Amino acid sequence: MADLELIKESASQLAVVAGAYSNKTFVLPRPGCGNGGLKWEDVKPVIEPILPDNVHVITLKGGD
Figure 1 (cartoon, rainbow, N blue to C red):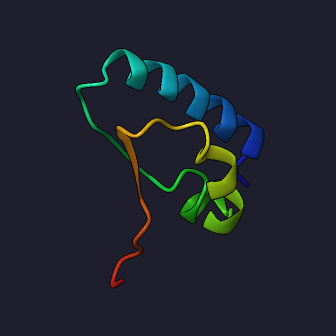
Figure 2 (cartoon, helix red, strand yellow):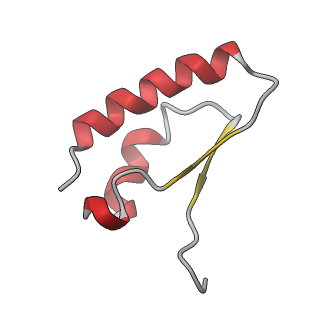
């Protein structure tokens, strides 16, 4: 099972890097979801306020 606190810390670290490279776009899958066993509805409100505008989370599942 994925650790929501670790995801929050990782999102904070990614926000620092993304801030330093604001002219770049960062794309990541839904952290902790899938093999991590968490639901996107639980992860999204934790990381959404942390990530800057140049970080995009892919939220579509295969076939959506």
